[in-house]
Structure formats: structure tokens, C-alpha cells
Length: 332
Image 1 (cartoon, rainbow, N blue to C red):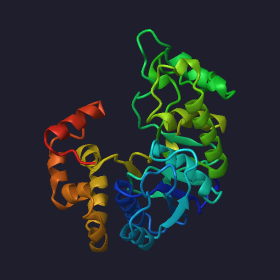
Image 2 (cartoon, one colour; image 1 turned 180 degrees about the vertical axis):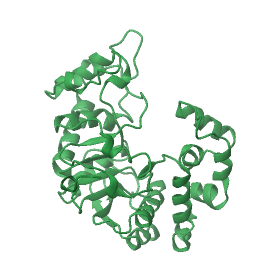
Image 3 (tube, rainbow, N blue to C red; image 1 turned 90 degrees about the vertical axis):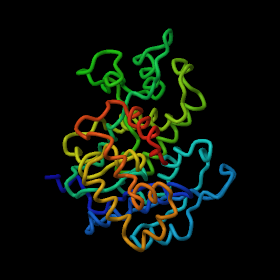
């Protein structure tokens, strides 16, 4: 059982909502939270970027989407983009942290469903962590370029951090899994203000004045995932322990796209998705989102699911994506 001293009852769950795909995913997230955790004592906050010079069009959600979220108990919190924006929308999760009330928070990517009891998770908000459901997407090692150790150690040195203590010594040298690297699909800390300020500072430093070892590396879209492990390490955090195993498993599902959800996720994830998407008041809003319409309402998700054995999935996500595309089932 989680240690009650580590899990304040009023922590904030934060996600990003904006015009287009994310507003529909935010509704699914909010509805799944209400379905599976009706007694959740905290607050779901959907952070919404506001129009400004860093956006070429209005990024705010539609009125029907906003109304649905409010009916589901979510708070919509506006924030201003001062650094990132349309050119790097992944920066929303960084800049929105400054707008949150300064109490313990759990960030969830909007393309996430809550499928189980959050009370089973043993959060230690003083020791931040993040999702380990990732592949070796960054850095991409060039034939005559720097290796993993040189690249990552240059970043730790930039911010005065101890590189050696971040390593997983059970993994071989120059294998990507030896180095502290997360998926930014979820992360948490006790203070969104302090965590967000440092994440923004590190990300800007890397983007605007990259270490020489990174000169061959692509930073977009990986910038948030490059800075995240450095910030987590700087606050004394690290890889998640067994008390958080339910994240990315039976408590939350970061599905990425609905075709991928049907292809590879659990029966429980499909059950939760279909239960909330078929709720009549939500259906009136969600039917305007082509992936929900096709995958759920037109049963194309079941076709996608039949293509794969969940007990013997391809090791690389790209193989799953290619199969779905070949069958005309790739929607995002």
C-alpha cells in the first residue's frame, strides 16, 4: 500500500488542452478520471495556451469542448507562451507549469486514459520521476560523432550535475538504456513553480547554446525529453520505483493515438475508452473528432485490434504504425 505521508490528497493532475486533437483527448482523459476515480480528492487542471505572437491562429479550445470539460469537473487554466508556441508545441507542458497552484502535481500527456485507482500509486513528490515507457529515440549516434557518454556527460556538466550517479550500471556502456532518459508522458514533483522554472531554464540553455557534443543532434521534437532527466536528477529524483509501476500499466495508459491503443493496449484500456466515448452527452462533442468517430463509433478499432497479438507485439512501434497504415487504419 502507498505510504499516506507521501501522497497528499489534494495533488493536481495537469494536462494540456488546445484547439484540434488535444481538446478531444482532454475530454477522454477527464471522463476516464471521473469513471475510474470518482472520489479523487485533487483537481484535474487542463492548461490552455492563449492567443499571442507565438501562435499564427487561436490555440484555444472550442466552446463545446470547454463546456464538456467543465461538466466533467476539470478546471481550465489559461497560460501565456513567452518562449515556445506553434514552432515547438511540446513546450506547452513546460510553460504551463508556472500557471499551476504551487502544490504537488502529476503531469499527464493529454493522450492518456486513467484506467485504475490512483490511490494505489506510491508518489514521493519530493523525489521526482517520469515515464520509462520509451525507446532509444535520442541521441541518434553518428558514425564518426560523439557517443552516448560524451553527449550526456556534456549536458550534466553544463548544469553542474553529477553524471556518474545518473547511470544504470546494470546496462552496458554506450547502450542508450544506461543513461537517464524518460518519456515526458508523465512526470511529477512537489512544486510546479520550481520544477517548471528549472525545466524552462535548462531547455532554453540547450536550445540556444547547445554543448559542442550536441552539434550533430536534432533537438526538435526531443528538447523536452533531453532537459527532463537533467531536471529530475537536479532535484534528487531518478527512475521510478515499484510503487509507481501502475503508471503506463493498469492505472494509466499513455496510448499516443487511438489506432495504437486498439493495436497494443490492454482490454481494460479499450473498455474505459469505449465506456466514456459512448456516453451520450460526450458523444455529441467527440463525434467531430475523426479518430474517435472511425475507431470507436464505426468499429474500425476492432479491425485494428484483430491485426495484432498483444502477447507477441513487434518490438518497435514503427512496425505497428506501418501495419496500421497499410490497412488504412492510421488516424491521428
